[in-house]
Image (tube, rainbow, N blue to C red; front, side):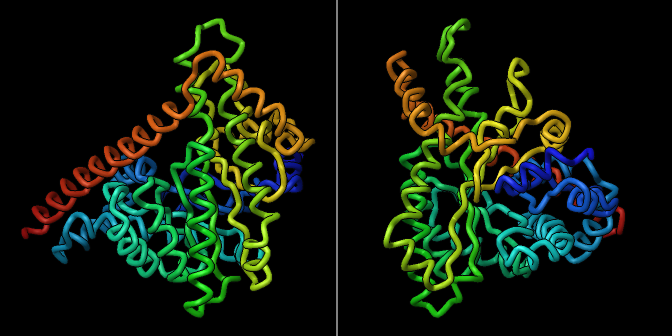
Length: 370
């Protein structure tokens, strides 16, 4: 009975993915329990998640760090191997889900080094290396939706690698992501890849939009808290239009799977807001919602997910964004700032992770007399 609301969310067409991963969750079967009991059918990771996990759980990673140190592995490669190990393990936990869903779910995401976010060629090379290192059919390689990385999305898909396009904040950029994805599938087909084996999601960030817009509105404005969900609903409208296009129908006839919208950043950051708002406000078919475990627990306890809250709200979402513009909110500036902040945040976490691992490797070498 405790998972009825999560079951209802899943039945409504929302794939529940966990926005977290660490080795203790894997070794202690916590992820397996969420898959078994809470309808979790996927996992996303990012540099901030791995920094928290690896820097905070030295005992869980000590043996591998020792071996890497003895082998003289450099810090960049060590981080790649540490994170790939966890993602590979999570892929194995979700392997049955992957098979049962026909390859759509059971996915685990790992992100390209965020320092490469403005370098398409390096992003492609790193994406290929990660796919080879994890070596699981249910891995998703996360590629940022920066303007510079759009060609990388196409190139990685063209190589037959499944992609999670991340850090999408604007509907305009999302439209460009859809085009890059379609071009990637078209190229993959020419390259002889089976389109049915290529999966993709587009991670549209939600709560951070409200966080930024709310700071630009008066404290008593009724428009506070209206931007994020409206923005996501309009993005979904673009997805619906794409699904009706002849370009997509041609690829679907070749076995391609749709690039589902993934609602990211769905943990509530403003304590004044209902803790399930970025889940219950974005319920519709053929989407993913990746949540921290606290949000999963909140939805299980009191989330109302009984109706579609996206498609019937397209018109209201358009009106909400118009009201924000009339109130002086420059949404183009908002999303541009959020993209810069998002990349910077992940770079900072990655650099901190490199520093932590470098220190751990040095300690292990000293202890081994190397």
